[in-house]
Length: 378
Ligand code: GN1
Ligand code: MG
Image (cartoon, rainbow, N blue to C red):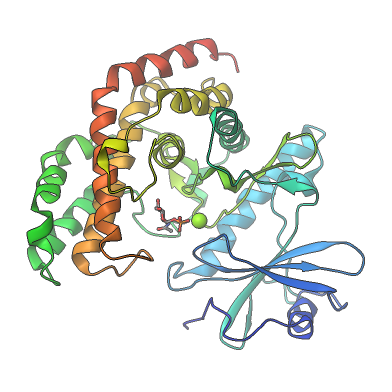
């Protein structure tokens, strides 16, 4: 069944009341507002006359093809976090997302051509939506590090892969090679240099996949969308509360979660910057994030996880370059674009960042090692 995540009519209070009713909530909301930050699901903030808030989402089943497994993952993970924080004496209602069940016990409610889910709004919370500086990155690192630590004793094999082979770099390279071979839109001629750049580095970028296959690196619970605005803080004290946007939570490498924040937020340029002289890895932002992240994770990382952390960060930047370039050659089918050749610009920018990370590899290692050494007993 295909559901539509976009609302083609304005979502009214009474339309929302019908959905709330299915989740066992029998009052009419006082206000419903669409939130437009996310690119994937339709998201609405609901306020009730009592002051309680909810987040209602219309799930994008085009990207999440098995939404029931996705919600099962989220249920398992949030349940584990809730139990962990209760044991620590913290308030579970603010420490993780709390999704509601329908009166039939389901976490999803199909209505018309939409598939809805409902969570409590975490009250008095805020996210940093501004361009990241060192203090925001340190806090985001701490948030994602706490998330990893809360789930360190969770058996990741219980989770399904919500997007199969999401970070299987080896398979992504194979599929990239097929796209290049087919050249379906005749775009190859303008990106031959970038294609060679990708292919020249494919061996090193497959190393982690081999280590996973051989069971040498542990699969943990990873978030896979570690943008700084996916961490919530207390609006007044700026203390860490919870990690949100759990749709891509699945088994993965610890390094992936560090990698994506660094790729996105420690780049001195925007993700689609055309002027490649502006693109570089900001080592102070890199260090700030790792201080927060490794401060919570170094104590349980294996020796090989520590040794391959920098390779993991570089691999994700490489993989993202490949994904953007693959999509450009295939005709912009996956990523939303708002300007011509944006996926090509994004790919070029990621390749420039990858090259800069290679130039700064020794510094990246020495910063990471220093932080790990200081946090062995975290
Ligand atoms: C997508 O839409 P957004 O920004 O949450 C993508 C990520 C990429 C990112 C690149 C499910 O995430 O993997 O890193 O774009 N999410 C999915 O900007 O493919
Ligand atoms: Mg997202």
